[in-house]
Length: 229
Ligand SMILES: Cc1cc2nc3c(=O)[nH]c(=O)nc-3n(C[C@H](O)[C@H](O)[C@H](O)COP(=O)(O)O)c2cc1C
Image 1 (cartoon, rainbow, N blue to C red):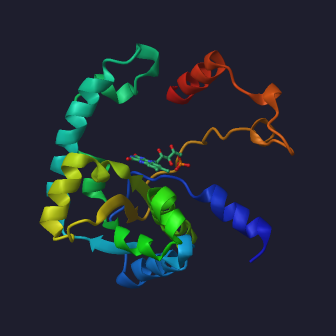
Image 2 (cartoon, rainbow, N blue to C red):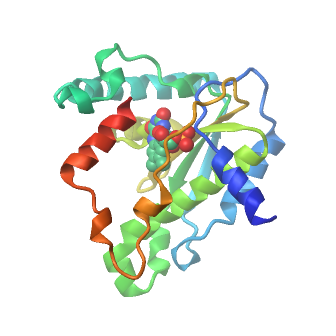
């Protein structure tokens, strides 16, 4: 593996939200999980566990709860200034795309492993380290998926209060575990549009924070609005 190949992999990982009917084999899913297993974590605590979901009835239930949550979220979205609203807020809420995704991998974390941290880290940074570890494993999965020709998408909605409680009950997730996020996997049916990526110079500082690069509130607002377009 050289840097160019790695960068190519990183750049070609994109969120895919539409899939072909081509099935994803168990072996392919295992390869994705194998990469996640090697992710770094605070004190090597490895808080992650993975639930593979293929059953359509389960997907339908999860999609329903996510949609109910989204209904309220969209109503709340309408309270924001129009230019900052997500475009979808004006439309009626449809089923989340993960309903039609061939394989879902729900990433859950066991917070008890944080006791392996040194005491002060445990007290001050437990939550941050825990979530960072789960995010790392998640990213490894997305890269592994890309290398296998799969598309993947990040569905964080399922970790919100209402869907999360319902899903924990349906899937028998142990009390106290955190539903982190869910990865959808399948063979891409679409080519994503090019993505806006911030220019490296604007976000790099040498030795000290360069205040010439600090974005004013107005500049930041313009940037956020540009992302909505
Ligand atoms: C923490 C996190 C949460 C995300 N949650 C969602 C989500 O709930 N639904 C969704 O469609 N995309 C979600 N995404 C995907 C982002 O929208 C996507 O990564 C971003 O727009 C960049 O596009 P790309 O992945 O194609 O490069 C999430 C991404 C991250 C990192």
